[in-house]
Length: 115
Length: 111
Image (cartoon, rainbow over all chains, first blue to last red; front, side):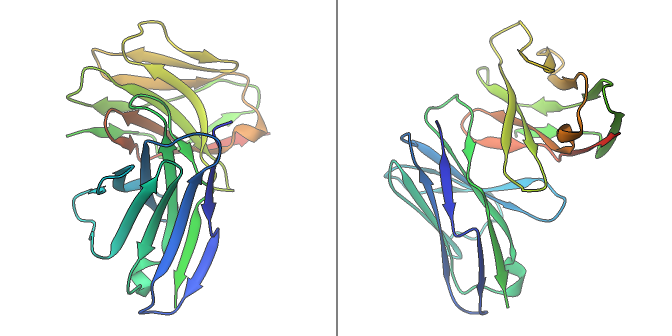
């Protein structure tokens, strides 16, 4: 149980375009979802925390207008990278929790390359 | 501020031996959870072990165990009888309202 599916697993887009990444909890209701960015051989940097039905809380230094997060239902959160640039190329990972104090379950990650 | 620190960027262990990975954290919350996650080359995050802060007893999960020192805000992971499949990046994580990760420790297992 507790499967989180992230799609797509990799995407290449042209500079200036937008790309959407989906994160779905397949067998549980995710009250909270997290979005991370990970550079090669580095840790996961928390970008934002989203609770179903409310606006995402962004970490300091993360541009909310560039990284749009929508958590419209208890099983789906989306991250849209708007007007993507090569420096946005990275590995993006989502995770989901069912309650305030439980472990998070992770998606497979999305490798974004902006050309 | 909530921070998680792993002071060992890289560690190595001989197969079948024991290794301990260090983690310290800082939090203003009184109720929280601590975790160790493993990230193999596939980059899929895998939960290794969890510890509730209100529990004094150290968590164990087969060959994995923790040494949780709440007053010192220390949470180390011990891997016994290391196997080749244990080679990965290991991240210590802390959760209260958010979910923060440490900088990671790259573990190499030597055959």
